[in-house]
Image (cartoon, rainbow, N blue to C red; front, side):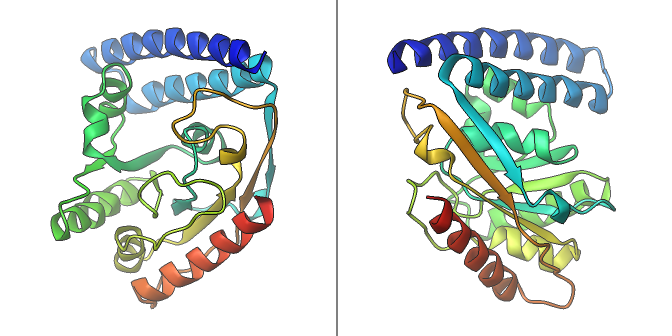
Length: 237
């Protein structure tokens, strides 16, 4: 039953993604404002999360909503275990720009849509050039009112795994002065990385206390963010 339910979910997700990509590209060509196009992407994320619960019995709950800043944008540091969190961040936080690997832009359907939504694509082997791009483009997005979502570990990890945070997000925070909002979850227990199967249950997402960045070094920001995320994920997983 888990296989059949996962198959049903995947079919619905793929069909809706094709529809989304078609509409998003058409709206981009017709110069429809970004705010309108972004609402379409959020609608698709909301549908996909709903469809996941209907077909696979996988719901979610949110803790720490009181920590989400209400004035001005921020930088989200999110644990990366699954595809799931790339969807739900769009439901939790205001309009946002994602830091993602450049290769995703080449994917049919998903990549085409993502490319129209003001992402910050980087070459993970680019070293300092990639970091400079995160700082420059990220600051531009933040100053324009968009939030920036970063997965500081750089890749999806199994529940219980961790790796040193990349410096790009912390340098963006230190240079721009915008605060960091850490996010922990246990989605990998139910939708593991590189797995077709989605298991029933409830994903818990926890938004942590804001980490102020003004007057602090990138190393201090990363250390505090990683300490909170790793500790909270260990509790959840």
